[in-house]
Length: 291
Length: 57
Image (tube, rainbow over all chains, first blue to last red; front, side, top):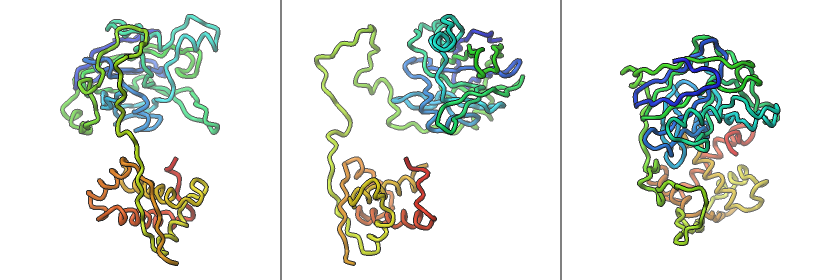
């Protein structure tokens, strides 16, 4: 199907199905979001995805759901343009009004909301999107930048559903920025089953005990009203509290103490030997064991 | 110089990580693990022209 400018579409993707998002003319940004089809409270989280893969995830990356679920929802099976972004939030009506003086303008927030409405979701259910075909960067001062993009006609991204998802792509509404080279153009969507070879190429995901489900929540009820009211029966149950410190005396030889002296971060810990050594121990642990 | 006693203040979560690392075979006890960490960290960082801190925040 052709996704027309100014529109989006919510599509049910079953596990093992692939959504191909393809450039027709080229140079078109596509915002993408997805939800667990059977529990919309589990949704794609650009933050988790960004942390794992950096600012420009592409082929071979998963799109992850937000904590406390934190599991792969979609696998990027193919990406011929290699030009994606997970820094920028979706554009919104307020952006075009505040910057351009245009209170009524195509924007990804409203397009996503309208597409998701087909499944009973509200504008508040739109989350930050995975921005496909968006050329971004960070300048020397730390500001985020958008540049013109070079996706060509026929470039595509194949998104493989790892679980059943509601996938929501939309044609980015920005025609006043470089995002899509100052125009809005249609893109082509198609859905097909992944081959056995493609499925076999997906890295295995071993669920963790901490990939929580609503069955483990202390409150799993979805709040039906908008007003926030204190629960008079609430009792706080935080993890591992109270946090208590114990002393671990470590005898150091003159040689070892000399190493501590050479490695210590005096600018942070002054003459606190224990704090300096603790920093070294956990820095060492990161270097040796973090993957 | 004589032996020095350095006192680390560690909470139960930090101790849990150290104990799991010991269980994994890195060292026989907490004190030896700390010494191992110090020596390996020093070997890595003092070998370079300056402390390698690029990956740390």
